[in-house]
Figure 1 (spheres, rainbow over the protein chains, first blue to last red):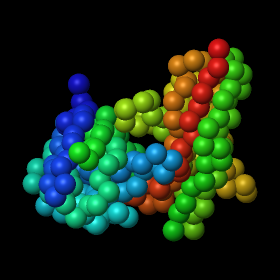
Figure 2: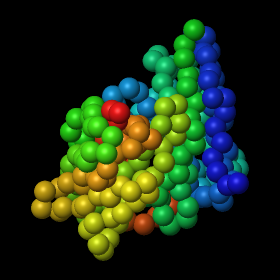
Figure 3: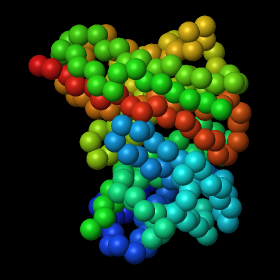
Figure 4: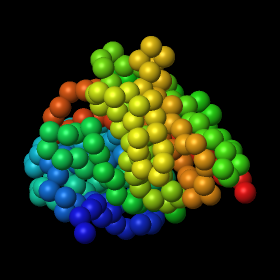
Length: 113
Length: 116
């Protein structure tokens, strides 16, 4: 089955630690996205990538980093500079020429120990 | 710049009653509009979308929405609520340009509760 796989489902971060969230898609989509979801705030865009080796900052990129070495993969690193990382993180992808139509993974819930 | 306002963070309806979730948008260009549904601890699933053409859009699970340009609205309705409709619903807007990556702007969501 084609889809977007996010792992792990739950993740805990210690103070000062960097953690990486995985996102893999087998839909052959060109574009991939990372969103952060906080209660009562909807989704906010962190980073997005249109093609391999290219990515752009979204509205709340500070404290996060990404890479796009393969078309299928778009990992997100939450760095120690992100002072309030507790949130639900959603990865999405969209097909070529149809960036408005985004498909979402099941999410990773990140908590701080 | 685009924005979305969802009126009512929580909506409760009885099973079998009409569901109406409100969404108003702001956009300087003709918009594309979307409704997504999210079940607890899951990702978002696309319910329906308006791009061009017919302003009444039908989606999955019996939901539909009508694009009203004069009112800058895209309200979501379902004639008869089912217990399985209980979830959080998000309205989103993007511009109408093509391209491989486009930013969606989401509303803050409406939690729908269906009472037996």
